[in-house]
Image (cartoon, rainbow, N blue to C red; front, side, top):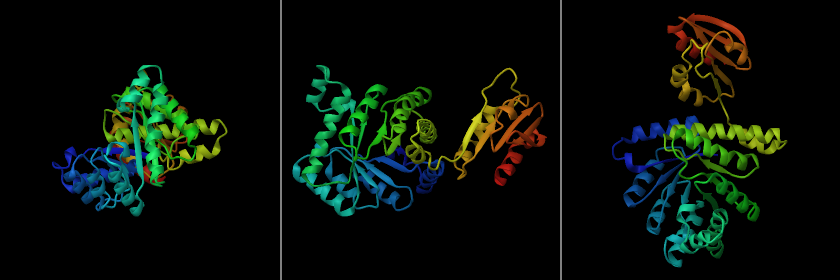
Length: 348
């Protein structure tokens, strides 16, 4: 379900080992599929080499040049992102779809509000809603697939508007209920603004049973995109469950893993929750455990407020307190907090 992207711009500067280690770190954090932009043949060769080195499913994102798509299809990639309407003649489209079908590799149609066909852009300027324009653009691409009998297709409709992203995906889901959809909000912005916009757009869709993969687009690190995606899925699962849609809740909640509860700074806080959470964030999200971990700011309310946590830590002065489900486990010197926390985490 979780998806992210990696650019080839840094591969010339990094060794294969460094890149594969980062991919493995993303996988451990919950990323399920990774998309690469492939602008030229050199990038296609790099993707092919990398695909043979990692277990993460890799996706080739290609525009305009059908020969790049054909070369990528020689490698063990998981998917191609290409729009048949922009790769040239009917013969070129047929060649790509034929090879993809023979290799049993699916293709994703990606339609963005900022790159609509000129006639649909004109209609949008004259009153057609952006959501309707996105759906019409997708239908044109789907018709090309239908002409060639290619069924291994999924679609993404993305806009920078929360409302239009929701409307477009709901419209497409109503028209094509069996069509797999990849959800995302394009150009969402930096970390805080981007997380808010992605959450507002994706949670209603996911909780309503719409969407098969997601990409949280942020002007930030891939790691933060993956963490945001996990939390969005968890929130959507909670809402779906509360609405009585247990099937959707179970689907979204699969593999949720660790849930982190932590305090902001306040007048009572004497334990640096920000620094401690920052040190442990990646490791916690990489654990294959369905647990709740609490990092609380004070011993006054911390254990009580986080009494549901499977493991918690708080502190006062030069001491730190470890607790489980509201009950104290042990008190240690603050300098030993990380080591003691790691020991108790291993015991869970």
